[in-house]
Length: 180
Image (tube, rainbow, N blue to C red; front, top):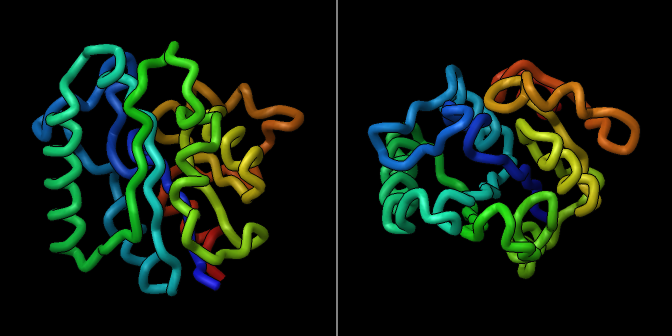
């Protein structure tokens, strides 16, 4: 079985401009320590699967081509650091589309694992929104909530069934919990 960790992009790997979108590569900034954290995850034997809502495309805020340009350049930066991710999965629908792939729905997760043997009890999703925690729980995996991005705003929503398995200040802190 593969050992994997699902990770959200905006607010976890890169700085999320709250109230706006990362629309171009010039808008993209890595969260402090994120590249090193991703490398540590890979070096530990885990594979990384990126799961990200990109409603700005479906809502007409920026074109899909911009997402792919940002993604290509992000992957190039990953490669410079020896970071190769297993796969990336994006919901390109608008916020009100009612699709089955926009988190907290689990369509992207199902797509990501369709040909993958993994142990849900040893699999985590790292995200910065309550909807990330909800998606991970719906999919039957463990969750780590980070306080970067929307984290500081959404932390108060994490009650009852939305309580994550762990809360970390950022991806680097999440790795400390995630790795044996």
